Image (cartoon, rainbow, N blue to C red):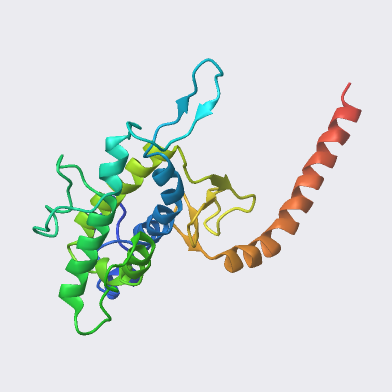
Length: 238
């Protein structure tokens, strides 16, 4: 069975739990929900474009009558129009998805499916609270067909945020090889797990530290032996 949100074949541990989306895709959804609130300060500051003062070349203030606004940013941050269906909703007057509207409507859709089994999102929840509430339901979403639409819409929100703020999570390649043998372990900002790009394995920070402490000393010794052997061959070369 193929993951509903990527091309990976689901593992037996994933299908046994009823998942239709793989563990790495669920991790990615959580990382995106953690990332979105961190864009807010720059998004809010980007509503008003900076202006240059006359003759001095200095920046003028952003307040005052006639100050232009970036309507795209303002609309993206603003509230949604009245909600429709869970997959055709949360748009502003220009039919563009809004951040608060998309998150709020998905929280309402999940709440409608799960109530009264789970607490509802708090009334008037802000973007950070909505992201935190949705994060607690990711495992459930990954077992439902709705995860495909949720992934598509959440990815669109993240891409819009990044295009406005120019803030992109850093990816750091880690020195220890994955247990699969590939040097593909990558740490990404706001992600709770370290992921192998070769096999998709997920490791917590603590698991990686233990793994690194186990595998790196033998690798260092092997590297030193290879270097010593190379130097010997160079010295003995005619």
